[in-house]
Each structure stands twice: as C-alpha cells, then as structure tokens.
Length: 175
Image (cartoon, rainbow, N blue to C red; front, side):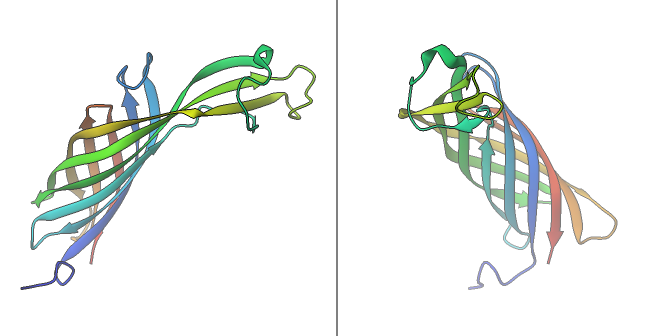
C-alpha cells in the first residue's frame, strides 16, 4: 500500500471574494477568502482548507458593550468562516464537498466628537456575549488552467454553500 504523500502531487493557494446573500444577515455581505489545497494526481484526491474574513469594524477597539450609546454610528455582525474541503481530482478538474462553520460577532462602529477615545474619533466595540455560529455545507468546483509547461497552473474555483457563494483565483504547483 502506498503512502498518500509518496506520489506525484501538487499544492495550490488562492485568494478570492465570497458574497453572502441574506443567509447570514439582513443584507448581502462580502468577505475576503483565502484557500489552499493539496492534489494527489495518482489517487485522484483533493484536500483543502478555506477561510473567509470580513473587516467591518473601524477605528480603535475598546472592550465593553454600549458604554457610550450616543457615539454609535453603525452596527452589525462581522463574519468569518473556516471550512474543510475534500473531493475528486481528474484532468485539471476538482469536484469537492465543503464542511465548516461561519462565526459572527455583533459590533458597533462609533465616533467620539471630542476625540477622547481615539485620535481620529473612530472606535469600535464588540459584544462577546452575542457570538453566532452557523454550520456551512456546500460544494466547490475548481478548474486548473494550465500555464506554460506542466508544473504550474492557475486554479479558478466556484464555491456554493448554504451560507454564501464565491470565486477564487490562485496559483498551483506540481512537485
């Protein structure tokens, strides 16, 4: 029996955008997506990790909640996700399943007119008691666009889950 790491394989990394329609909140959300995977050509396997983050809080962070309600200018939930990906690889295509979780934290973006809490007046606070966790299940379709030679390619992926959909572009190398 051969070891999974003892044959022709490749590694890929990607960067993309994920859009969450109203499944996470009342409005569409955009998250930055980072993904990486390992390809086994001989075994036709693909394993990957995927993480998405959102940057909605602005200014200096202060611990607490509703300390100065008159300063609140914007409120919402900031989301992130972490997923495991496993699937079938053949002839530059991947069809994979996604299983993970989305994590949300309620926040307030605030502005202090007197600029006591921050030099530019911008500060934020999060509600540690209002964390949300949601299951994330879906599929990923990936195509590796060959580059000059056989050792590198550009992976183009489309992810569809019960929480969001997105696309990613990256670079892949065989070794």
